[in-house]
Every structure is written in C-alpha cells, then in structure tokens.
Image (cartoon, rainbow, N blue to C red; front, top):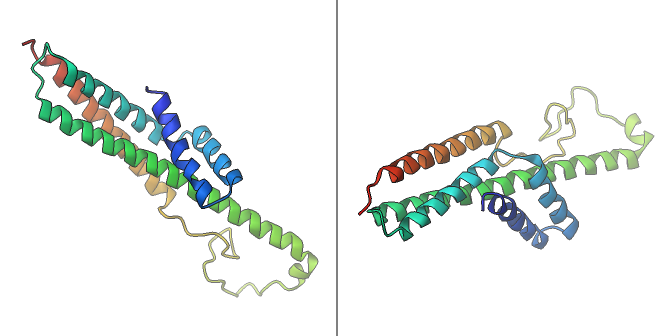
Length: 177
C-alpha cells in the first residue's frame, strides 16, 4: 500500500493529460513524476499508511476507539493525500510546459538562422514577459513559484507526519474493552 498508492495515483492523474495534450506528452509526464522524487511522495505514503491504520481501528472490536474521531481523521488524511497527488501533477505539468516553451524558442532561433542574429534588438529593448536568462519572454509564468512549492511540500509532509505520529500514539494507548 505504501508503494502502490504513491506511485499509481499521480501517474493516473497525469494520464488524464492525454485529453489536453498528446499521448507522448502524457507518457513523458508520467515518467517524470516517478523519477523527479518530489517531496509529496512521502506525504502520500504517510497518508495512505494513516488511512490504513485508521480503517483497521474502525474494524477493531477489542478496543474502544471513538469511531467519529477515526472517521474524521480518515477524511483529513484523505484530503492531505489528494492535495499531494494534485500538486505533484500540477508541478510536473508546469515543468513540462516550461521545457516545451524553451524547446520551441530554441527551434525558432535555429530556424531563423543568421538572419535573426543580424536583426537582434538593441540591448535597451524591452520584451514584455522577458525574464533574466530568457530575454525573449517565451515561457509561461509558473502557476506557483518553485520555492513556494518546496515550502508547501515540507509543511504538508510535516503536518501528515505529526498527525500520524500523534494518532498512532493515541491509538496505542486505548485500553481493551
């Protein structure tokens, strides 16, 4: 469960990009989601473990677990897990779009050949959307800055870990009926 859910959930969501992009893009996105190793993977694994343990607690007839509390935390961990899956999909898609725009800009520059070199704008010219390192302004702005995604991933994973640790400790102290 800890390996299957974190790998298959984002791949399944990224597989849906076949409807908005071509099949090659969908396959590339799915492989990148597995190899990039974003921090959300651990959040998803923690959440799936927590839901598993909570469901086992609901089925346990020998302990007096408060079912409403267990059900509440199943929803909480489910939402954290779903958020992690969606964020992995969005960040991977944004990376793909950035690379696609860079490749298109490079292909355009090569196709233009030496005529483009002769017709370069003066250094003082400003291109709307231009960024440092990308004077042509060919990339789409990121949905969320990468630095913010790192912070969110650390906080989301830490939240899931602390909740799971506290819940596990609580459940181990409940006496038998």
